[in-house]
Amino acid sequence: MKRVIDYTTNLLTWTSRLTHIVISLALVTATALLTALFFHDIYMAIHSHSLIKGFLHALGILLLLWTMVELINTELDHLRGGAIDVAVFIEVALVVVVREIIMLPVAETHPTWIDLGMWTGAATLLGLTYYFVRSGQHLLSQSVVTRNGTDLPPNQ
Image (cartoon, rainbow, N blue to C red; front, side, top):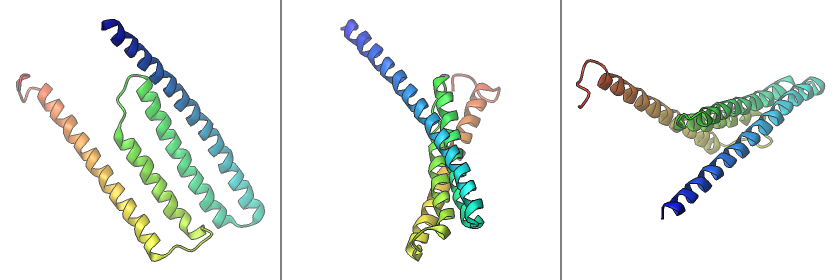
C-alpha cells in the first residue's frame, strides 16, 4: 500500500509542477500579448485622432496588464513555497469589473441603467468582499503575533 501512496504522491507532485509551468508560460504569453495590444491601441488612437476613446481602450488594456502582474507575482510566491492569497483573485475580479465600467462609455452599444446597476453592484460587492477578507487576514495575523508574544502563554 505504501508503494501505491508513494507513486500517487509522486504523480500528483509531477502533475502539479507541470501544471504550474503551463500556467507560468500562459501568464508570460498573455502579458506579452497585452503589452503589444496596449501599444497598438495607443498607436491607433494617435493615428485615428480619437484620443479619448483610444485612451480609454488603452487604460482598459493597462488594467488587464496590471492583473497579469498580480497573477504572476502570486504564481511566483506559490512556486517559492508561499501560500496562495485568495484576496489576489478578488483584486483581479475587481479590476476586471472596474475595467468594464471604464469601457462602458466607449462600448459599441449604449448600456442600460440595469447594466450600470449590475456593474456597480458587482464592484461594490467585490470591494466589500476584498475589505472583509483583508480585515480577517489582518485580525488573524494580529492574533498570531499576540499568541507568540508575551501577552499570552504559548499553550493557549
